[in-house]
Structures are given as C-alpha cells and as structure tokens.
Length: 120
Image: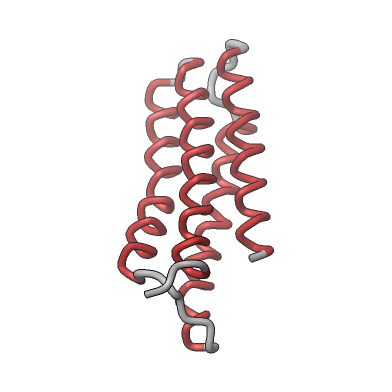
C-alpha cells in the first residue's frame, strides 16, 4: 500500500509540474521528460512487485486480468507521451506529459483497489 501511495504522489506531482510548466509556455525539457521517466521507473518496479507478490502469499482479491491490463497500459502511457513530446516539442506537449502523469495516478489507485479491496 505504501508503495502505491508513493507512486500516486510522485505521478500527481509530476503531472501538476508538467501542466503548470506547459500552460506557462515551457516546451518539453529534461525536467518534464525526467519527471515522466521517474514515473515510468516506478511503474517498472510495480511490474516486478506484481509478479513477486502472489508468489510471496499476497494474491489479488480482484480480477487479475483487469489489473494487468491497467498495469501494462500505465507502463505504455508515459512512453507514448514522451515520444509525442519529443516529436512535437510545443508547450502543449508538456501539458500532455502532465495529463499522462495524472492519468497514471488515477490508474494506480484503481490498480490498488483491484488488488486489495474487491472480492473475487
């Protein structure tokens, strides 16, 4: 649970930073792309945790397929957003980075609910 909350906070802060920077007229930079890179790194760690947790006696209570669809989508989202930002390089690309990070924060909360709250 603590790891999920940390991921949500990091994704929300990264999202807010990128949206404010983009609306302020800043084009994608090392800071905005780096913020999404941190979010992506945490998602890759989440993939490892999702593989190891059931083997360690912590299986999900919800639908495992739904969880993995959310997780794979979340892992792909920052990659797509960064590719878009590097191809277009406008202030709106920075806003897109922020929206992607906020979407990931919401997806992480939903994944936590699927893993620990639902009854299968």
